[in-house]
Each structure stands twice: as C-alpha cells, then as structure tokens.
Image (cartoon, rainbow, N blue to C red; front, side, top):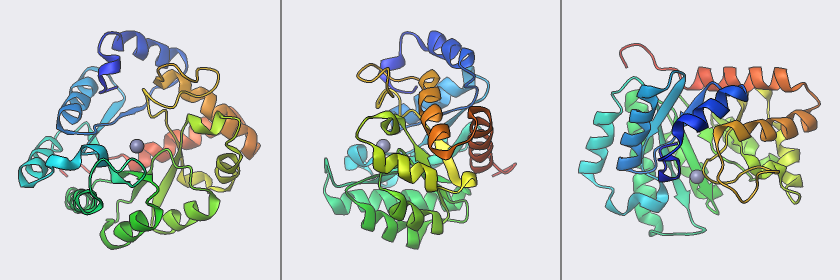
Length: 249
Ligand SMILES: [Zn+2]
C-alpha cells in the first residue's frame, strides 16, 4: 500500500478491503521513502499498521545515517515491525555481505525497539536461519510469503518466527506450499497479499490488493479442513499479538 501502484486509488482499495472483511492490514516499507509513506498511509486508515525497513533489493545505501532515520521514524505508534529485511540470493541485487550487514543491523534495531521483524528470504534459507539464530530478539517475527516447505518452516518456527502464506498457495504447481500450510501450528500461521505482487488465482497477473487475501485464506482453510471464519479469526489474532506495541516502547 506504500507502493506507487496504489498512488491513485487507495480509497477504493480500502473500501474493497472492508467489503471483503479485511480490516487489519500491515503496510510494508521497503526503503526509507516507502517506510515514510507506509506511516503516512496508516495515519489515515484505522486498523492499518506499518513496518519500516530496508529490503535486500534496496540496501546499497544502508549506512549509519539510514539506520538512524529508521530508528527515528520507528517511534511513530503505527509502526509495529522492522522490515522488510532479509537476504535475497536469487536476484542478488547487492553483494551478499552488504545484504547480511543490513539484515543483522535491522534485527538488532528491532531487538532494541522491542519490535518483531518481517523477513524476506529467497535462495538464502541457511544464511537467514544463521543470522536469526544470532540476532533475533524475544519479539520474534514472521517469514513473509514463505514457500520453503514444511521442514524448513519448522526450523524458523523453532527460532520463534511465524510463517506467512501469500497468494502463491493458490497456484496450480504449489502443492508443497499447501502441504506446508497444513503443517504450521495454528497459532503461528499468518496470511498476506505481498501487494502489489503475487495476486492469488483468480486475480493472477493483475495488481494485488488486500481484499484478495480472502482467496489465499480459502485455500488454506481447505487444506487444514477448517472453516474460513475460524481461520480468519486465528490469523487475525496471531497478527494482532505479534504486531502489538508495548506502551512507551
Ligand atoms: Zn519480500
């Protein structure tokens, strides 16, 4: 929602989310400007909360001054997590050591601010696990749009992370993701859109938005053999618990 793809019709997007029963939305920052935009958006919309952070694709200028800026904007009460941060060795826009430094620094900041982390992982499973083992604070976090399978999910769950499932689960060839979704303990499971990306079937190929998360929930409810309503209640409760902010922190 902090993405330029939503610049012109955020009110309509919000209205469609409400109509679909999606009242709580985490607006994700991926660099300094989208982090500031995420905060701005959440000031206008009740129930929406923000993350601030620097994505591995955008970490080339990650230095002392960048971390100071993130620390300062993270003071805003709508900010409930640090991220998106993590490691992306698939696209590898930036050298691995540069990505790792940014990831570690943001995990430490999250710990200092008593906030959870929103973690991006692609082709970097072992390294992400290694960094989290050393740096993850008691607030934990969430592996976002996780597709790594049930066994890998278990490793992150053991570290205190949650696992979030995106629209990828609705794709025909995503059987391993459906198996994984069935295996996650219900109190660690989350859902997301990753909007504007990863639109679930039947919206695949078009811009994604919060209302579409319902398609993802439907598939998860199916593989877990539970009602849509109880799955919605559980994932909402999990997100509310992870993304609370202690008063004064
Ligand atoms: Zn990501």
